[in-house]
Each structure stands twice: as C-alpha cells, then as structure tokens.
Image 1: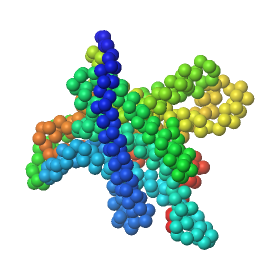
Image 2: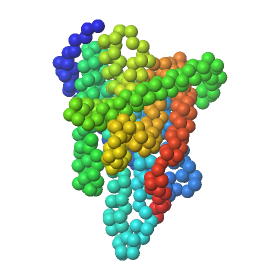
Image 3: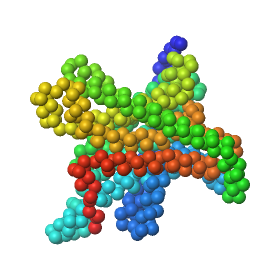
Image 4: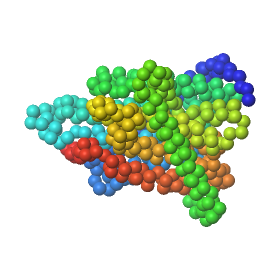
Length: 225
Length: 238
C-alpha cells in the first residue's frame, strides 16, 4: 500500500497545536502543584499522624497508585453526573490527575521527610541554631537533595503521561488538538509525528530548566538526560 | 440516585457481564505480559549492542540513546495512535491486538533499556578487568560475571515497570482492543450507571495491580544485597 507523506499540511496547523501545548503546560503545572499540596499533607499524615490518619493516607496512596488515571477520570466524568454533579472535561481531568499525582507525590515527599535524621537535628540544636537556621541549613538541604530529582522527574512524567490522558474525554490539550485537527484533514500520521516532536521539545525545555533551577537553588545535580 | 444504582446492580452483575469482564481482564494481562516481555528482550539485545566495543557499535550507541530519550518523552497515547496509523497505512489487515502489543512493546523498550543499562553498569569495572585477565571471552564475561550480579539490580525495577504498565494499558482502549477499560466504556454506553461501571472497573484493576506489586516488593526485598538493605533502615525523623 502506498502512502504519501505531506508534512506541510501538518505544519500549517502548528498554531493550533501550540495552543494545545499551552493547555498541556497549564494542566501539568496545576496538577503538579495541586498534587504537591496533597502529597505534603499525605506525607505529613503518614509520618506524624496518629494510627487512624496514617491508615487513611496509606489507603489513599495504595488505591490511587493501583488504578489507572484514565479510570479515575472516567469515574469523575461519567460517574458523578449520576449524583447531579456535572464538571466539564478540563475540570474532571484536572481533579482526577491531581488526586492521582497526589498519591505518587505522597511517597516522594515521605522519602524526603525520612531523610532528615534525628541526630542531625540534635547536632543542630547543640550548635545553638535557631529554628529558622535549623530549617534553612539542615532540613531544607536534606529534603531538597533527596526529593528534588524525583520531583523534577515526576513533573516531566505528569507533563507527558498525565495530561495526554485528558484527550480521551475531549480536553483540547496537545494530543486532543491533534485528534481534533486530524479528524478534519485526515493527516493522522503527520499530525502525530509533529505532536510527538512538540512533546519532546516541551519536556526537554522542562527538564533543562528544572535541572538549572535545582543546581542554582539547592545545589542538586539533577539529571537532564 | 443510590436506589437506581442498587436497582441496576443485579442486572449489571449477571453471569454474562462477569464473564465479559473476566475475559477483558485476561486481555489486559495478556497485552501487558506479551508487550512488556517482548520489549524487555529487545531492550536487552539493544543494550548489549550498545555496550559492544569497536567503532561499528557507534551507530547503535547513538540510535539507542536517541530512541530512549525520544520515546520516554512522548505520551503513550500518542505512541499508540502513531503505531495504529503507521501500521494501518502500510499493512492493511493487521489486527488491533497486534497494534496494541507493538505500541506497548515500543514503549517498554524505551523504559526497560534504561533499567537494564543501569543494572549492567552497576557491576564494578574491576570485575570485568579480572575476567579479561583470566582470559574469559566477552560472552563468558557476560554470562558468568556480569549477569549473575546484575540481574538482582535489573529484575525488581523491571517487574515494577511491568506491573505499573497494567494501568497504562487502559489507554489502548482508544484503538478499540477489547480490554477492561473498553468493556467498561461499552457497559456505560449500554446505560449502566457510571459510578457502578467505573467503580467496578477500578476495583478490577486494583485486584490485578495490587497483588502483583506486592509480589514485586517481596522480590525486591528478597534480591536486595545486604548493602542496599541497610539503607532502608532509617531513623524516624524528630
């Protein structure tokens, strides 16, 4: 079977795709920060909470890391209308992904919490550090060094694996835009090759800037490649 | 609303539907297993090619690095669509199952190649030098020195990747393979309540993923060297 590639048609649609890329980036950022807040709460409960709260956090993490993000989003999008709650596709994707990311970020943050040892805090106290100094010179460097590479990596994972799931229920992010435009011009292969290229560029920019920020702010040598 | 869900329940959990869902679970597991195991084997060959000495391996090296770097940055959904349309453009009678397996395989290669490379590189250089000094061939060095030590490093994350991929295969429902998510969508379209359908589907995914991930954790503890076991025993923070 013969197929003639026409990348010109796909490249003409670049403005539409870049709009989608902006939505992808927004969705990624919102999901990440929402997830980070949930993760902070979850990790605090898991480390410092009482027996009941700790179990709740553990159950949350186990449930959300063992079911697909797509099903969680479907549940919100197709399930909640049964109870009279109707959210649009973007809200459902955002909430679903945030809850999903929160579970993974709980585990990442907990690893950071555990990395601060008790005798290091005692040493800081012995040296007469104030609470602020303890946070600034002992707690933050430890936590940053342990979790910054994992966080940077997870942001890229959300940006790629996470946000594209929204396309399935019709969010106009990058993959969704590609599907929308392809159904009009039937240039599926070319469109998706271009979209794949945009994803590569987008995530390269993200990992590169995160690595630079990490090196500048926390003296963490995050992996770029 | 709850009464209607309760009303639908006997009809939803009828024998036919349950059989359908169990078959769909089997399909999900088969997709993951075939795709990931094939991907793992191909990735292993790729890594071996990449590590082979001499100038002729250079193109393989560059290709392997580019492959891993590019495919780890493209969403699985986009890879699936690309595979679907590429295969359909050139092979007219490819089954959807094949397409899904190829997509999973392409994705698994990119991830497991990194795991395998890390594992092989974890073996100390001196050991390879010692093997060379004792006149081991490259094959003997690999089979008798590197692999016995590296597989304990490779296997746990590779298993974790495969188990994690059970969830990601949900996206393959987009090309129309009859796996769990697709069946759930079908039942939802038949008029069953979304809460009921997708709640059940979520539990079924959980039933597949959780036991297997526990097995993976057990495997990791079992294989972990005494050195890395010590790092798990950290003090509680103040």
